[in-house]
Length: 121
Image (cartoon, rainbow, N blue to C red; front, side):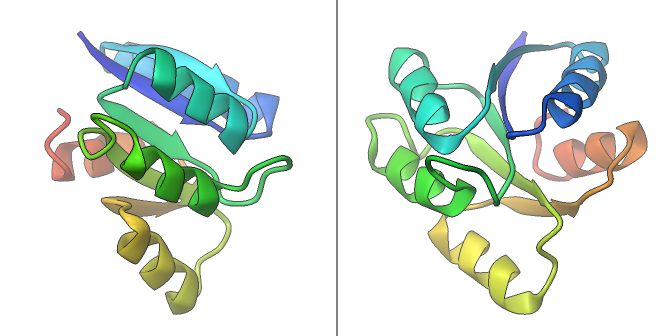
């Protein structure tokens, strides 16, 4: 079973994502900010990270850059899931190591399509 770390400061978004991912046969772990997510990655590197951009303590882009430096940090497939949809944000995310980008709000169909696209399903 593949694992996905859901990183979002919204409890509702984490809950919705967890439900969808568990239906897709993923084990899930949650983090409410980038720092908590980095700690989770140090304990066990996930197969995938569903990542919000705007969060307190450490935002998504800073987390992504730090995670990619960790041992095994190049392994997880990172899908940004955010309201930031301008080309500058998307390019910055891809440059920092994101594999894909989806817009909020998302649903099961969108998540399944993106995860299939990046080879997780």
